[in-house]
Image (cartoon, rainbow, N blue to C red; front, top):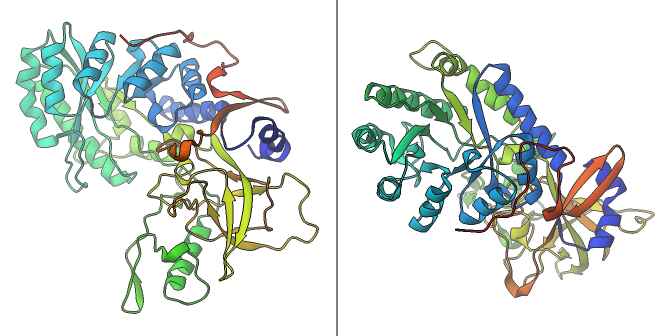
Length: 465
């Protein structure tokens, strides 16, 4: 990616314009292979599903199909995307909350349904004309924050008689969970609870053989986590009025200022994480399950259990960037410099978060002979005060000029697609897929990407039922 930025980006942006979301399917493939290697090395039978919701890229979906991994979808649109890329229904799993129209579609396609709540289960039983493959999503684990998703753990074993009585309508494949945290201890508690519930299901005469641990494997954004710690320390000092303000319009990022001190924790994404997804997965597989004295990997293999997981961010880690052009710079009376971009805030970061990864300034013309570093704030293109791409001062190596490019790293995992604004009729950023053959880069429309090697999927054309 660095090579592409250094050698090809300016030409691509000149040809296709900006803003751009650029995705790198070969990086995506490398990330998926690394996770599979962790599982295979420990002899764990598994099903790795790419969580489609992290990015709308068709190139990623086709790459996943070629690689032989499966896909996790959460809407009818994502189902169409998966089927259109060639995924057979047996390799598709549906998660998240589902209304009746979506449930009918899933049943018609015979997709595995990860059941979020009791209403969904009742509707599946009422609507299914054949044994529909399902998982039950479990929530409410001891010591874990409350979640709006899943069926409380203490209610799961009351469902065994219902499932046993409706074997002609539902086929229980296993239990699942998804935590809104990447903490190892929380995931281990959820695993322990689900293993106990699986044993209860076996004792009730059911035969589930899947433990689904969801996603939540984190990304590694920075090679220097110390810089993150330094920034938060200096930010706290600046919020107390010591030195030049570092934030726009007094933003505190979740800190509370009072009594001469700064309280609380910031609402930043986990940018300081240093544990790769592969290491986090390996640590879970090697962890000893409380009361069992064996590792999770050993329990899975000894009991012929499959491990399912639906990583999204981890497979998209460093597999995408977002590029915007500088439109103009503006000097405010207090000395603040605003750099206006042809991009909106929610096209590079979830609207409620602040991006802490510094963008890269790529000059579209020769850089100044005597560059002078400066701090600036990045402003978006919407006629809204809140459309500040950075509410923190960003340090650039020199004052950018109209046409220069800013590259936002590692945006493929949710950052570019969690919410894409269409206000003021601005078009969405174009999405291109970038591939490399030896030292030559090719950038073309994402929807037209075709993997170089044939895989187990052949793209097809489908339409909703």
